[in-house]
Length: 458
Image (cartoon, rainbow, N blue to C red; front, side, top):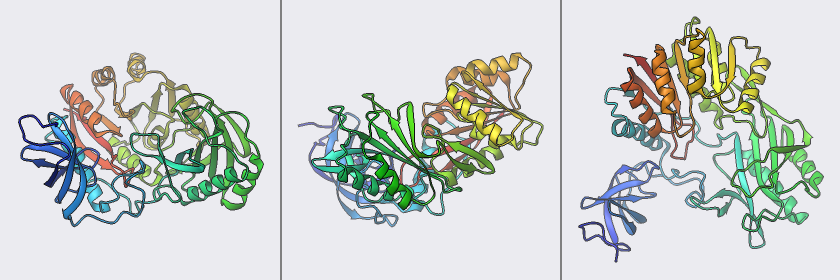
């Protein structure tokens, strides 16, 4: 029988514990004597009964059996399948408590990883309505026996949890899924089986413009042939308001990557449009675009505030992606240079720049840690540097290159508080001070949180 080190704590035994904290995914954390136990679904301040299902040297995992003393912030989940679905995991918390957890999570990593005791960490900025906020959803399509299933994958698996309603995506997405299932049943269209690499329909993607209300439906298929597709297009045109685009995307590879490189326009346009602030963007099936448009404006406005632009500054936007932040900064900067390693993203950025009549932004393809020193060598010195890296954070060589340039301010937009804390620590050691960190809730009902950090030269 498995035991924790030096403790008479046994796997598969039941225990009553008090939950006094949260883990990084929002799970409750308590102790048996001094042995730490993580309990999914438990809330800070609760007393719970758990079965210990995993025991390691330093921690255990408990399955929640009973809430003996519930916290006042426990609430009834609006979704009946959220515990099985991988789409969101915090619906048992009131929204106020979700924001408390996210603020605490940022505070914890800034102290533990970043050793940033003096930085002011503000309360997480939340949404007035934390539901139906996603402007893009990608859903796998599969079979459960003879039944077609469409939904999110269960956590840490490829088991599709069938759903009729998703409370975080656009309500139009539910209707699209219903029409897709009806069409597949009627014409006996097979869903993709990743084990045998057979079947036709792999995924369905729905994109909706928040301000324009334009709708795009993308059917991802395992080959070029899509029988009776005109019947599906006719149903979508009749039932989906503001439908602008129906596209077949072809992905024949044995891969977890959702979209292939080839797309066929079945009806309508190849893009839809939407806005971030005053800037208009054309969105294709492959375009990166923030999935929460309301909070994107909150996030970008905070980044612009931290940049403290007066109209005379030169800004470098490292990891600029499709240029959304660069364009947002352009209205207050003298000149913005956006750097991104992916050529297609820069093509999209230049298109958006032309469509919006912006003349004070220049986009460059390349690695930021290589291109920024080149810009400096050519005599271009930044007053402000904007960072918005992927989840893994910045390359350390880039942080050293930035510090060597000595910009007055660095604004860091991050989708992972842990890598943000690591990188801020490096920048602190290189002569900068983290003044303020603002968490922003881009993903209500889930545990992820984004941040904007303001750093100034010491």
